[in-house]
Amino acid sequence: MMQEPTILRSVTGRVATLTINRAAVRNAIDMPTIQLLGDEVRAAAHDTAISVLVITGQGNIAFSAGGDLREMSTFTALSADTAMDIWQATLGAIERSPKPVIAAINGFAHGGGTELAMACHIRVAVEHASLGQPEIALDHLPGAGGTQRLPRLVPLGIAYECLLTGDPIPASEAWRIGLVNHVWPVDVFAERVAALAARIAARAAPAIRYTLEAVRYGLEGSLESGLRLERAMSGIVLETAEAQAGIAGFFAERQRRKTKDPAP
Image 1 (tube, rainbow, N blue to C red):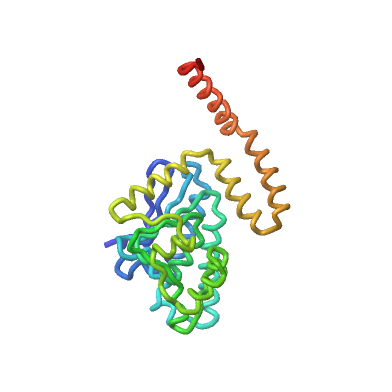
Image 2: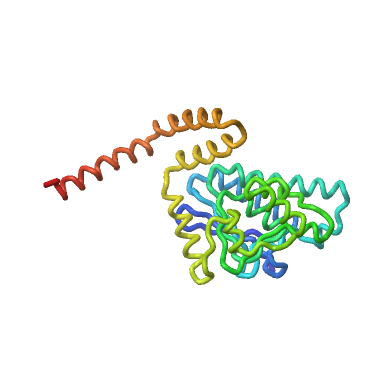
């Protein structure tokens, strides 16, 4: 009997959903799974039929419990470095994706699960979800970006506390500190994730791509250099057929409203 892949891919409209399919181990991610996830993200980046990616976990208990500890317990220093290089390459591909990536955190996301979610552009969580970097409780530290992305997303003191205590962060607290964008009840979670993804997917691909790039590259330099970059990218996008159609549509709609409701 053929085993199901550990990453499931489904497409609705212009939205592709990648589901970590290891519910029996709370969607813990082993090396074949992180490599397959990276392959799927890179493939989606070149798929013109896809505008938005959603990453989630199978079931309603865990987004991902993080790295597979059974596998990690066999690592040497050298193999651990190689493994973390693959993890970082996959999360880097997510972060640099020209298509927006939404983490739909449908349950707890700990360790590598939180690191995966933090690499996504937008994070939304179900009410019973929690996030956290518990590595310190096992006397080691994150290796896939936890010490680097968390302080870039939340206040530094909060990041230190999370990393040094390993305490889980409930969804409501994750929203309060800005780690997730929205927290939704379980009965409407899938519907609201789909609506958010579809709303973004409806926008023109060049505008999406260059918006992501302007933010990403702008944050790597000074405000002045970021503003110059934004100006250049805005000019490039303004020339596209999609932008011209959007502007023409704006004026056509304004004319329609004036015709329908003439001023007294």
